[in-house]
Image 1 (tube, rainbow, N blue to C red):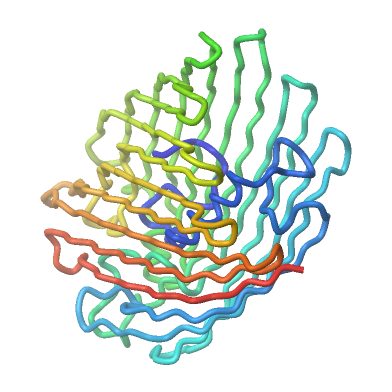
Image 2: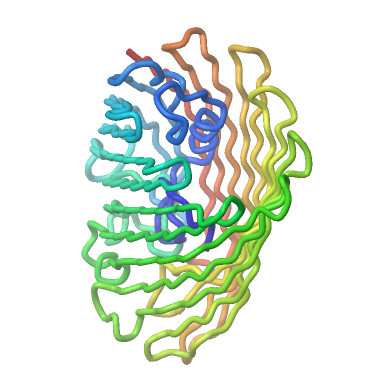
Length: 415
């Protein structure tokens, strides 16, 4: 399980995350933007200084494996049109509201069946400061994706006409966080997250539709100006919509950690602990839990992040495996080449062991995901992007293997 923070990305391997290069570019905007509306809710530079903003993105992409099949792969050009409406404003001196809606129309030149797919997403956030030491932050993200950018391993058949080539899904994630200062050096936080997954395909829905709840109580102590000690208890429940008596899980976590600012440009964070997982009608498991990260701001609007996480995550084949034991190593970089050109890259290496149910053996799997983007900003309201993404999954189960490459070129105009 990765950091318990509001996120537009899921923590599960079943949930298709966004394009790696696109995520890194978006995070770079958030990290480097100086918010004009409120110090506790940064917004992209193109949306600063005004309550309402509208943008329009159009582009073309070539995808080498649109269904994520292990063989007989189908490639296609994809033409995309995606407007977005955003609202960011301080409604009072203590309350900030942010919301956006973004529909997306994708047209595939060589897709069997429907060639036009319509997706959309909504984001809403309310941040309220009761005092300088006490804050409440509520964040909701809804996504209905007809063209997932990361496909489920092992569910696509070599014949694209058969079942399970429709991996479209709906997901809603609601986060809440309440923090208050007990003393000048001690802060307590209560955190909660509910994530709902629903797949459009009937077979995938019967297997994978579920609700994940995560609750946490955390405390931090400012040991030194540059050092913060943390402790946290988390409880996670995973409830499947169908056949839950064989798939549901409950986990309890105890974590301790440290946040350390080694220098003005270098920060590090570590969380280490243990997870006690109860599986319904399956063997229980006690496992370590780890989240390590490092960030180095080596130049203006340029940074390097790296980290490691160990977690038990859901598998896309719940009939055969109880969990996926994942070691995740990642490196992200953003580099400002000139004031108008920004390059970014992301590499993730995920060696994992799928935990077989009774009567099934464990299998080894490894995923390498790479993303790169080059963004050109000719003006405050324009951005032109060239992107490349590669997913390579190798597995002891040949049906779960996948190679997928995507090349894209897009332009975004903001009003």
